[in-house]
Length: 189
Image 1 (spheres, helix red, strand yellow):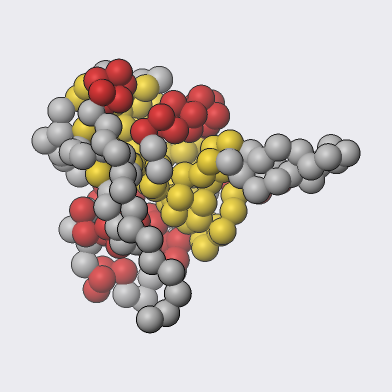
Image 2 (tube, rainbow, N blue to C red):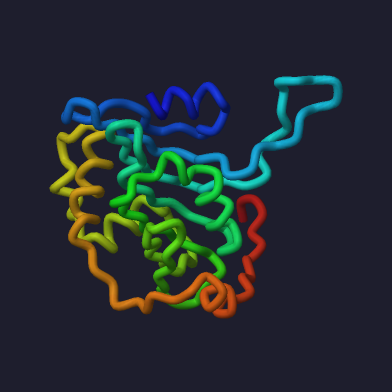
């Protein structure tokens, strides 16, 4: 199974949900997905330093060992091709991809390897909550559902999600990136 393969390769981290939905053969994952592994520690062939890049707070639906739904947060737009290159063999042709990107100022759509990625700007908050709001999913719809089925509900809603964001080339999307300024907040006041 795909998620077991990712787990064995160390590509899943900070896992919140990893299991089968109530639909047989459909699996859900929530957590961070490794885009760039950390380098090997000196003298080791298996022990790695922490990952260099992640798809943060990702949510995936896997069916027939293919990624049918992907959501998460990219710190920078230039990590999108890294994600596509690393996982393209596992991405279904009809994959629904809704990704938040910190360094874009407006919504965009980009097609890479035959999949249209709906890119949304991200300022702050929890990615999962932002997705639920974007898809108009009420908390009551999730009540009494398993964690895996909550991801499946988001996937079902994403199937009908429409955006008015323009479809642009990746180069055009890169030309529209912004500088992200984060506020420093340290400790309790």
